Image (cartoon, rainbow, N blue to C red):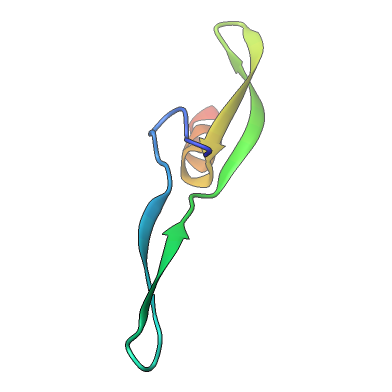
Length: 61
């Protein structure tokens, strides 16, 4: 399972609830991307959620 290496966001469990109120299990997965970022003067591949990736790109401006 993918986990964000910055905020440790990972999947959660919940229920799909139909019109008849029957609850079935489902998973809410984060939007995780593998990106290459320059950290400590060298390129590293990290797993980031889209929120952390957006924050990182805003900080570079």
